[in-house]
Length: 598
Image 1 (spheres, rainbow, N blue to C red):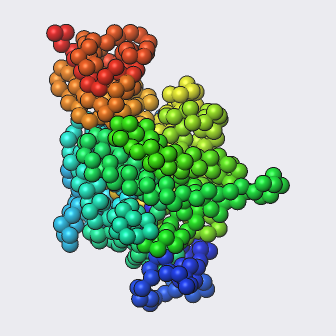
Image 2: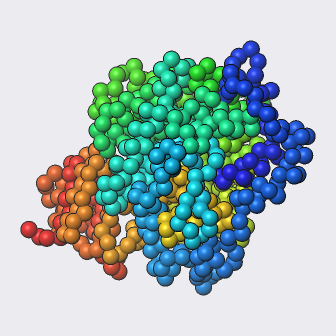
Image 3: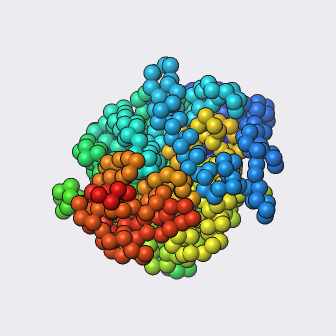
């Protein structure tokens, strides 16, 4: 989220200052032993008085009227006959803008990221966000705001090591993501003698090459987590990223990091017991893992987060590959127990699928003990996960439809097909708009309901306008700064997910792997062939190709290519230009597609 909105909203929130909220005979969770910082109080009457004087100054520093009814961030708006926004790039070609902005953002992130002159590191390792003087400038400056490494690095695995690598075969994806994860493991992991040992920090001070929790604003409602503060849901997110990157590279360092994250999460899972009486109110004051906790002491800083999906995804994946990584029976049982506990809570009378208290995700939001804030990230990601794993929910279609409609009802921008981030930062943003569009695209693929395809088109089209020609991805239409999460690692993947669900949106003049149910370890695009290797056998794969191939081989054996998908076979669906090749349960790991009949 852009810095000023969060800072302004922290003045207005009722969240208590952690100096009075959690200090006592126990160590202050976020900043024990650190000197009190002097300055303007950030809560109470003095804070409100300060707000009156500082509001115009702070707002003018970051907010900028860069969009109106004719242009968004310098891109002239093109409307269709119904008055809906079309993509700014080749608006006459459905989906052309999606590939275009993905390439612009990826090339910037992977190959042209600015370097911090203080540390010599890429800005994405030491900042959460960066800016430039105006829309046309090509100079970039890191912002002074708590950085969010675990979230950014986990998203980089999905957007680049999984998504963009399969889509293009660009080896820079694996090199850059590997360096990000290596840096986190070496410089952003809690010590082994902590109560939460060997897990990643979710936040850090700006320009800090070593992560220990964001301390710069630790007196401001504990935003940034404070010294030794961690977020268990981000332990799950990056743990899942670690195991996925292990599957790609077979480097066991990443597997061990993933297992450590899972071990610690399983050890700290809490059962949230339900009231026996059906006449009692449901409660939303505690979740299976807290939102914030002091990793050194184990003292809880903030008790509730709705984001149990991230740890569940980590557990699910480790359990799935248990035999292949020789996971001990005791470990597997512990993971299964913690996973089942969290999933049961999610759907329980106290869980967010019933209460819709989707709260506790963003690293730089102050503590929110009353759970007043609402976020759309967690329900949006849950909707996508349920679509991909429909067997997890017997009422999957009804529940996914409810999640999608709730997001659109609560967070849709007035007059535009855009999604706002959260109630405490009620601004439309590109990544969240793209997430909603991708969820709708996936649900259209599952249900065939044209409403969701139209929603996906409209929102994804709007999200393209955040990307400028130099690859700078602005946060939102009136917020010209860029965030590494919102603009890159939580932006690129949603367009690739959407093209995988609706392959006609991928470029007709190029060959691309749009989706694989298994991570791709290696892929090579040549003029007359595509070859790839997956981690799993029996993967489902979707390609957009310029022409029907002459041969489709899996582990050297030719597959029958029919008109309809069948297990262990390939199918070809022609489009006005080229078509879609699907392989359902590829009977092996090495796939070769060739246009040369010999």
